[in-house]
Image (cartoon, rainbow, N blue to C red; front, top):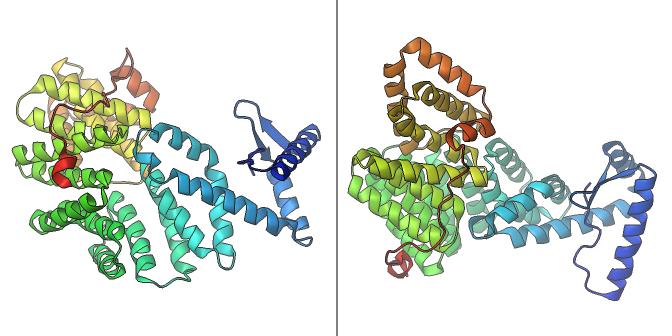
Length: 422
């Protein structure tokens, strides 16, 4: 178990307790019972010692106190993380949760196993939702959602909406769309009277309807969601609506409408300094630019988008966006490398156990056909298989030998969409 030797010291007694803890940890390291990671300054309990301690301290009641302190500490961390994964501190909080994830898992396990703490487990899951999406941990999130449902103790409309929302969003990324679950979430959200839940339920159902080619049904829900998000000033999720409505317009050839949505998304994501969100808007604009014949702009937008996704390390976004590099590669007669990029994108998606959204799917299908026509089946398959064996560092070195080309997070030169929404 990783522990923070000086967690939020506020009083003299806490200072004394902290230094006593640090002294104890130092002695345990000397006895090889605890290890110290000198780079991070964090202590780790060896697994065999962890198991022995759990078995032998329960009788003394010390283990229960330790569990409570541990759970409260990481519950506080998750509260503070909420919202920060979609803003200017995105990379810092991703790194922090990466380092703490084993502890966060343990806190959830203890909350689920402790009488009266089930709602804390749900709160951790809600706060983790953005992390699970950004780290493409859909199987992991499904496992926790199933456990929450199995051990459920709260049957309020708000709780029912939160559980349904967690499930429906995870299923969206893995292609297991369940419209009935999203409709259930919307019904409970309306019943709860909470705008946050209502907006998110409208959002999830909008995404799914666009994905199953029911844009006309999605449009009124998207408009209502934007009104709700405007009311509560949630520009991040308003941008989420725009990106997926833009995707629907793009695949149906409504390029002007798609461009408007993508630009709205770019304005909102840039205002929030959300690097991953800016990348999503830029790849959409790159798709439109290519279709409109502005190939130079398409290449620039694509490279900036992929750079943003690589910096955030989001495999789902990378798997969707990287095939657009085929435009640049085929123009330079680097056709085998284009096949390699397509193979890498598929392997990355399979690793995430996810599926592409409608716009990414259209682009991937179009480029895989073009590159195969250029190379022929045998050469295409060789390049594809080689690409599937590559890691991200190798692909980025091939595409960005001079380094990533990150987009600016300064406000774009357009009227703030926020004013229109408000």
